[in-house]
Length: 302
Image (cartoon, rainbow, N blue to C red; front, top):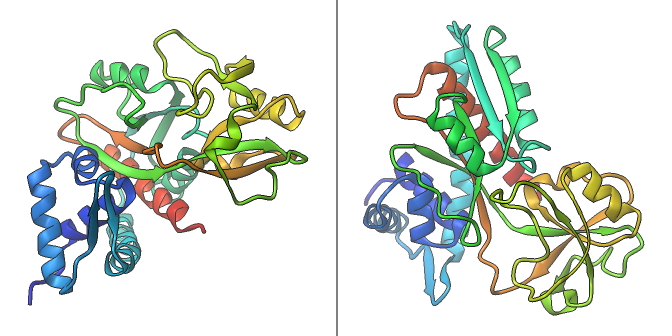
């Protein structure tokens, strides 16, 4: 009987998170054929199919769901062992500069920075907030060391040539609605109910991706546009409209705002990835590990 491997477990987790072999390969920096081989090896080790192939991608079988859940726990523990061992002889006293798109800067990145401070007290960490295209330009110019960006079918096809990537999260979009809204208290609503809603959307530079209305809606009604997330959510809390909110930022919603899932078969989701240059320094490696650890904690939250 074949054995489970760490690489195979990471591939299974990525396929489950992204919903397709192609997206998993892109997130991990592998070829699609390499992903397919790893999945086949893991299915041989499991003795059962791990995915059900469909027109819109793949969905985990019961065995695949169970294995992905166990894999997340195992990989998190293995990453933690690596961190703990490094901490025994920690001599990181250098400097690392990390940047993130605003939604990732609400919960994921602050928690990762807190972990870095605890695990590597001698490491100097600087942070900047910027759009994904701006971060990639800064990374290639060596102005930052780690870029935390969003990728997805509705976002630009970024040039990642020569830039390693680590998949952190693949999460859905949520709705942020006022606490007294008719959607509040409902776990999931069909996308067809969004047609007549007023939207609070993002506002930024012309070429920067923004969170607008729900991605598959035609001709949405835009009530207000605001640059900063606290402003947008403040408008929502005041009952001026509803907004799209990345799932990774759900823990940061203010009083008076509720989050709701949307049932939309046409929406394929987005991923959050950490991008670096080749030949990572120990400081960059530690930063990516902290991001992966905190992303795993967010995935584990029901």
